[in-house]
Image (cartoon, rainbow, N blue to C red):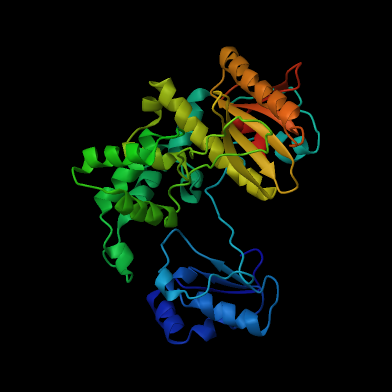
Length: 384
């Protein structure tokens, strides 16, 4: 809305019916032309593509939409060379006002330092932020109702009986919910597909073969609920084998909390689970910040047992490695040891350039830089 010169919202039946009858009329207006909830009329994708074939103007249209799934059978062109995709994730802690933003990833990539600073985040507040998530309506709500808003959002994600698309009408909500619950139980882990399938089978008491699972997972990906983290594979000139298994993550940790019906008190009573959910929250924010810098977030693990939670890799080849911990001096020391091992391995046996920074990202605690140059930063102090 900040960029548009004209717009149309396809969120009413009358507007949708008119767009289906005369899709070319939707394109009429000043540019950039914003077409909101475009997925309600999927053929608009091809109409936009044809219009750009006739007169290509960069940024001519902005096609925005919610997580409502699009009927791909009505789209006949992938948009390559015409339409660029931007994934809009839930709000990061900096966007929701829960991070001070005193530490900038961009500054660290440019060789900047972390200034020692006190941070007021408490573990109880972080547990609440995990359960609340980064949904705009929840963010602006009072704390006592924010969790209810998030759970209501989650409950409404699996209602497809009135969908025009047979692919979605045939999806069983109980199976979809069971897969999300399994992801929540295996959050921030390298759980195999077979393990998740078995978990779902036990919970819904129905057979689920790998092909059917893949079909359901594609549907959940299209709903922007799941977002596995792929492995980072630097060009190491050694026989060290890089583990390529993805780490299981949700688009927002609040989805997992809602799926398992857990609240902040439940997380605080089980710090191991809290740590896994906090890692999911941290990965969400790192993905938001990395995307703003034109980068991506991956994980590292090899057959020697060396593991690092997140690596931000920019398009120009710069990279930074991050270990995610709840806090505490012992955990920080272990995290720093892993970061030092990775840095030494890459410097000794790889054409990969030296890390721009090494960081331990914590749930609570102050910001500072250790004598070995590793930064210790709470998530509530970070921004892009």
